[in-house]
Length: 96
Figure (cartoon, one colour):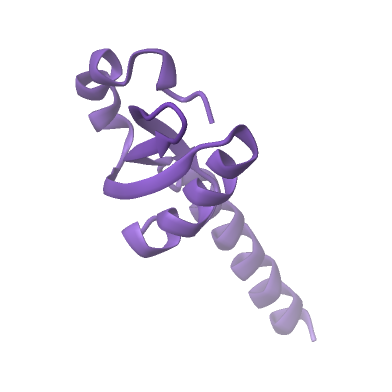
């Protein structure tokens, strides 16, 4: 019984440690708004899985209430890619 509890405690500690060390994930995207046509490029922090496919649905859901339609998720990346995209994203940097 003691070994089982020790094993469970070890698994719990390792899973918490790996979750805490998981790197943040970001996506850059292009979106549009009609009437009149407006386009923007932006960067968002993802809360779900770090993949382009998962980012598409998450970003589209965040943009829709503000009248924007997602055109394309360009890429997903870690914190190391934020600085190089900040100027291009302008006011849409981490806005949604």
